[in-house]
Amino acid sequence: MSEMQLSPKMLEDAQAAIVAHDPSAGDDLICIQYLAALQGMMLAQMNAPQSHREDIASQLADFTVHVMQEMSRPATPPPQEAFGIWKPGKG
Image: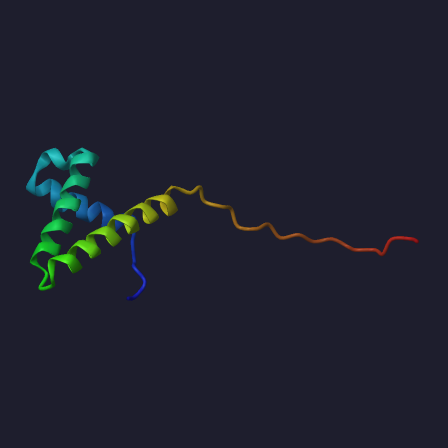
């Protein structure tokens, strides 16, 4: 699987598409419910055994939690450059 290319623009576009179908999806919780339902619809349409689709759904739930946790972490500032003159201690 290639690396995912998530961006604020992608999220904004997905939300806008859902809101275009249902204005109440301007509420983030309703929009998230639509995204989950769409995931379920796509899985239901997959040509795979039910047990395999259920396994994928479980893995996606875990992946959702992982992404949420990663995106919730505070950004760490880049390390500051340090400079100076070191002199050996006497002794």
